Amino acid sequence: MRKKIAAANWKMNCTLQEGEKLIDEILKSGIVLQEHQCSIFAVPYPYLINVQHQLTGQKNYFVAAQNCHQQKSGAYTGEVSAAMLASMQIPYCIIGHSERRMYNNETNAILAEKINLCYDNNITPIFCCGESLETRESGSQNDFVAKQITASLFHLPVEKIKTIIIAYEPIWAIGTGKTASTEQAQEMHQYIRSVLSDKYGKAVADDIPILYGGSVKPDNANELFACADVDGGLVGGASLKANDFTAIIKALPG
Ligand code: PGA
Image 1: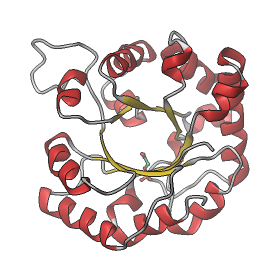
Image 2: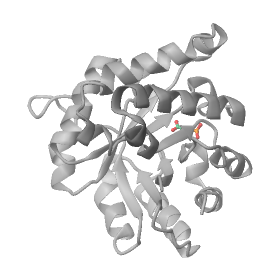
Image 3: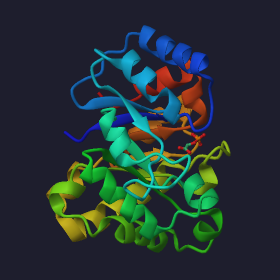
Image 4: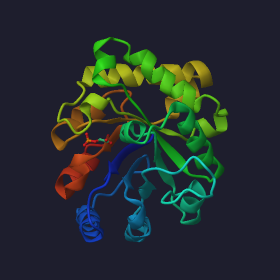
């Protein structure tokens, strides 16, 4: 069975103490994740070790970085490399979040470099894609998302891409309270899977988790996660409230 994933993206939120309390409260709810389910916390770099320790011994709970640099190492003050994350045994890293594409000018080509460095360091990328409102209104969202995927991922050999996690996050739904309808989400997820299938074959595409992101909340998680090609969510705002994120983890299909 394909993995079902509830991933939290804290972005630039929470102090160390607030973050610790948040994880504590979520773990206290005592959810036992099944074999095919997992929950991932993408937290700011300075908290990675701390959160990793908090999650030690918790089955199928993992920590993730929110980004890594596209160069192996060097004179890039303030940046963090994939090798550094690997040396801390960080298993996952978000790559290509729309906020980084927008504010840090991360192009599809730069993201391909980051993806390679993740794989070189045994870090599983959570690759984000998704169109703007303008692109959706022009009806070209499928072509746009396919281009993001082909340009940043399709140089990968099958052994690598088969371990990736993809997150479809329409920019118009991020932090806006406006969620894609289940029809819109399912349609795009199915399309992404067909793009993967055309290149790597159906068996590989059928195994890749595709998460939905963009205003996932406790009251829409159940119906979104019930869509055939939606394998969980990448959650921003609602991941900062213990009760909300707990409810979202519980919405993962059993
Ligand atoms: P949101 O953010 O849940 O606050 O819309 C999602 C994301 O950007 O990953």
